[in-house]
Length: 292
Image 1: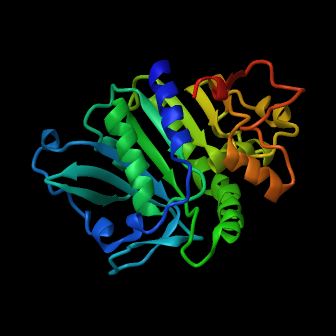
Image 2: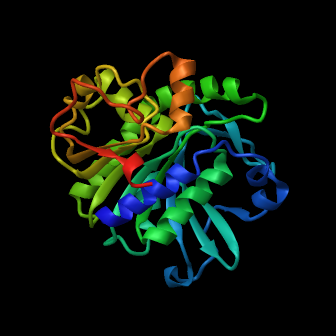
């Protein structure tokens, strides 16, 4: 599991760029099949699959059915699976229902949230790739992190605004996952993997005192803060509140040009580029600039 995590981190570092037109093309969206009931007759017929929880607004009846903006009222739950050359997006009622569709619940699990630059299709691509290449069950927490109506700087502020609000949507999701883990419906090792701006999810949960429902016991084996695009200052204070994770990894790279740009725009040192003292001593700080 540790080796797989390391390889995944290196892969993510090589692809941290804003998504252009290919993932928003008609060709890409036509690869998806929306459905209310499964197309397969047996769960053994499907290939790669993931669970997706999204706070995007839905564009009903449109080809690009998941929008670039938040739904303020509710979450949407999907079981996404590869079948007969298409990615089928099965709408389900809740997370428990979505997890019930996972073919092999004994695999290791990754709860994953991305950073800036992902529309719905590109987030699915990342999640399906992760599940396929590393043979893990993936629960993808999807939020709008780029819009075609803005340029790079505008998208930075658009993405960071949405990333900071994810905790309101996804804390209840983590609560359900913790319960499913305790019930034995999620087996194997469980890692919570936050990439780039996605680290605002954990930072805000801790800083906004929203930990109560998920912090009463240890249910996450590895909390991974990868290339964290969050302020470095006082990170030890909010990390010290986290009790639900057995291990905490902070992966940083002083040569990360994306985070260097974020430091200029945000006027703050970024945790994923150069963590400084005081550090959080129970965490493991991993310098990936020495490995790339």
